[in-house]
Image (tube, helix red, strand yellow):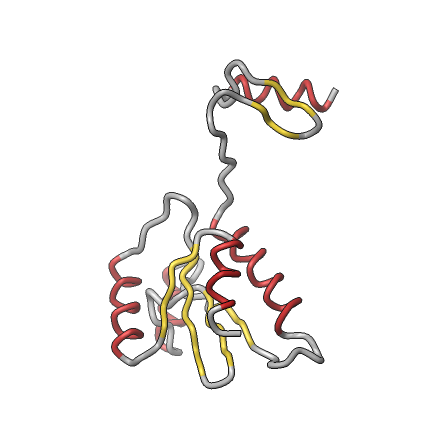
Length: 147
């Protein structure tokens, strides 16, 4: 029954034409990519990194954190700016022994905003590495450059 509902919904959205669903895999004549949001990709990356490189016993033990760089409304945004908010800061900052890496998360179609490009230029001019990352697989590849 769930399979029929999912297949019906996909057809209604025009995603599956001439295809069918079998064992939770979507089989179709077109390449189908289910896009993940930036937030979901970031969650997967942080969870993977913390499990692999931040736990007790990891050698080296590394640090990853995100920077909330937007307020919910104008008043909150103004308060954050007064306390050091910098628009355009990368979504994730990863600390390795002797190295800091800035990672901006984007979904498949996301592009950098002008302030993000400015931040990237500033970071690069100071000798730090900056990456744009669109998937957990890309994130793992970036991390492996530093481990």
